[in-house]
Length: 83
Length: 83
Length: 157
Length: 157
Image 1 (cartoon, one colour):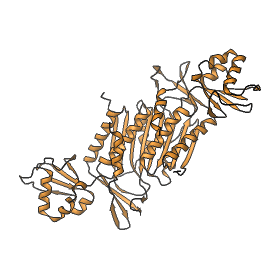
Image 2 (tube, rainbow over the protein chains, first blue to last red):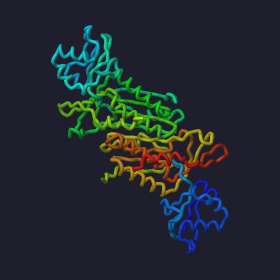
Image 3 (cartoon, each protein chain N blue to C red):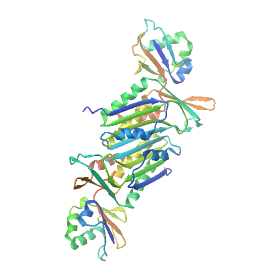
Image 4 (cartoon, rainbow over the protein chains, first blue to last red):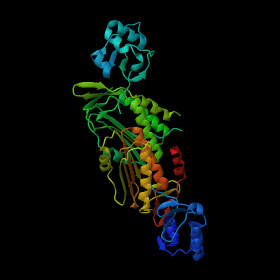
């Protein structure tokens, strides 16, 4: 699974993209976040205020309960500020 | 007094502008129109449907009961179609 | 609250205009948003089912400028604007010619959108211009479009 | 009623754009009205009371284009449009640089105004761009403006 990060989230993670092998028991975005929190404390800081995080699965806006699989591309980013 | 005509009204009158000496007893636009109708039948045709006529006195939108004097510039024209 | 008067330019002219020149002017000052309207002569009169070969615009010199000034002033009191340019052509025009430009700049985008839209709507109903369409040897004075009166309703406070 | 799909051009690019080139494209087809929005980088961050020396825009390639396409498609189903151009710059920009262009053409002016305004409002809330302001050695990721969510309310059917 590819995970992408943008804006200040990218800077907190320290990279714009990472590839992980999604464990079998993880079925949605919420479970992925819990899994990341277990791996490294830096994620806890990012995801502590979930309402500030937007999610895309395969480049489409998604939610914390969207189902995911190992072939998906997930992105985490703050609300957008273009225009 | 200068009277100006625009668009199809100008074509009906046959000129874009005329100068008249306003008789003393004429005090507003309505009275001017009645006076013009007396002078020449061509005006009757123009003013028979008053709701189609817009009036300006000294280049400001005005109405049939606006007071006028011999020093004023009056204009008669149909609703505008610019833009 | 009384608002600052923006930069204002109003022109009635026979010549064509260059939109990028006007945008350069609006771009000055502390501007974050520029909204432009460009009106283009269409080649077909849908109401009368008629091809248009050309049209001629006449206007009432002096009153035209005064009416547009009033509209622009009113827009500048409703919204915080930094610049307004209105250019309206008169004389003979052909299909696809540019006929009118309204450009409005502001710090904030919705002010620029509303100001530009407001000016166009009021210009259509108040500025003394008249179009006559020419097709072969026939002349047809365009009649007022009642939709333009309806469009004003959105600006009722 | 299903409406015709207009001419559509969407570009995400580092380079500046020339508004008059884009207007020439919109001018084609049977167009009576062209409305353009141009966003300009401002030199001052009012929220943080901070001068901005430069800013950098990043985006999510692929998703950005897809989101803008959805917005443009939705606009073309709401209003009868003849052309839509959206250009958004990314990378490093300076105050007074052009940042975004949205141009919409239509036979009728209110469709062009509404389509352009709609696209800008949705772009501001959905298209995945992020601005970071740079002032000397400090970086400040711009935070989402809640007014932009409020602006969407006018499009509720």
